[in-house]
Image (spheres, rainbow, N blue to C red):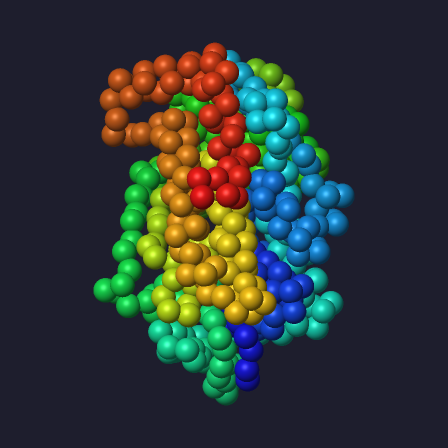
Length: 394
């Protein structure tokens, strides 16, 4: 087979890149080692920055998002039982975020790709990338007992943290930065109305909590838990009981509990790979970086990676210029490190660190007090949360 761009991974970043390329008349084949149902079954983030919303529109798949997504102009900080609203809309000159589950975004992209008759190979086994440091890269994979080869101009590694693309980069040409946090997030999804019309971020003596949502009838809650905790030890009742201990009276009065649809524990890490380009292979999304979910940046960073990469590839074909692909890694990493910093800072601010002394808790309270009583402090939080402009600092 021959295509212009071979995309490894059919998660949001791979599908979004494929759709943007299709709209620009550029051929792409997507390979995915899992089934489509498995991809749709992954429970992930649901907060979209304006840049991500605009990209969905540019890809022609934003109609359902605008109908069903929930626009949020702020969120609450709950500290020591007292709540303070961060008015993002006012502090950033009218910017908002949208609550729209990653599963739904992925479904929209899958449906658009299927409707256009574009090639996505699911259950592609033993995917390997070859000759990406030459002008003639190749990808091989196994399907139905046969080995297949795709010849292409570029390889887009959208295959996640454990994918083959980053693992295939020469160790001498890659540098990885990582911070692992000493706790995880226990998440519970339930078909219950949200406890509040916006998100509530909680810093409590018992640890961090987050009250989030996917729709007006589906809620997502998180609790900070030790890394040693096992999901089997957390019954639904135990989860709801612990959540109540971390919320204020107002939230507890409105909290509707119910059986979990999904429950899992996710570790937190900050991770960045440099560079993101290796010859004619490019890393995007979780293949190149991971952020702790506190700042709601993971999906949005993947989308901006895709935007930079798409612009470079389109420029290559339409203008016969390699300037865009040459700058891809530099542009993407600038934005990545800014989002990594915010996610790290917000995580440090909102969580209880088991090995820190009481003085760190005092530092947290003092900084939160400043943020809640300083317009400039609150604006810093707001402008990072809604997402810095795509061309910020360029």
